Image 1: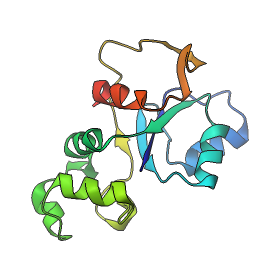
Image 2: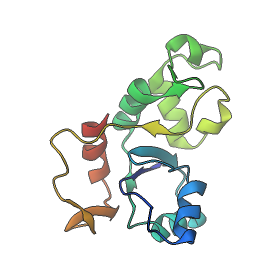
Image 3: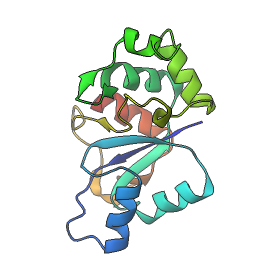
Amino acid sequence: MLIAAIRLRSGIKAPREVKDTLMLLNLRYIYNCVLLEPNKSTLGMLKKVKNYICYGEIDKDVLVLLLKKRLRKIGDKKVEIEDLKKYGISSFEELADLLYEGKKKLKDFSEFKRVFRLHPPKGGFKKTKKLEYPEGILGYIGKEINNLLKRMI
């Protein structure tokens, strides 16, 4: 299982600890997305910055879509099937399986960026960006992250 975290708010007036935690999570800019392993330290970091991000469990089909559309190489070039074959992987579905099962991580692939740049969601945010879930979109949103990601890819 993987957790997808998306930065939604600026950290201009944020406390230093929050800014540092966002940097450690590789969430430097608004609408950046990262994939994280759900362990105790990562969940603690996510809870600390919950007023600036949304996060939840990503489904495998959404992960495949994210990898196909938004995975980039260093130099901001799109990743093609030929690039995956260098690592012995035949398709984006196989890469998604390896990532989802925890057998590989994106940092194991030296050419690939670990951060996905997304668009603002099509149709806008259904809830306000300034409140926590369920009134707003911030914090832990569970499986609803998949709907948000589909609209942002």
